[in-house]
Length: 137
Image 1 (tube, rainbow, N blue to C red):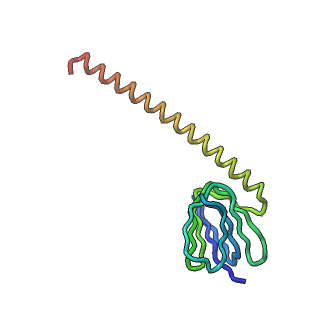
Image 2: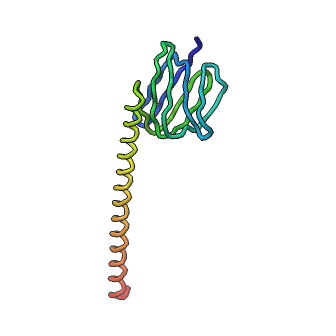
């Protein structure tokens, strides 16, 4: 059976898997599969689930918030911000949902903090400008 190398990269590191026989994912046009010897390709993956099978017949699942996939020279490379890998589909989907909810919360908190800083700076600038006007500068 023909196989290829799979490389996964995210903000936490990288992993690679040899002897991959099938890779299935989805982009904006729908689901697609990659087999060994596939033509060179690049795809923007949508958020969701991908899966791959090794030569022993073991399927693994990837949950990811989108990413970039490229296949060339019998190597498939997937780059994403974060992925979760496992043998149980529901478990990794739950992990991704929890991570995305935490990320959304962190973004909301950061935006609120930035808004407070901006308000403080505008208020301080107003105080400084008002003080300069009073002394005739």
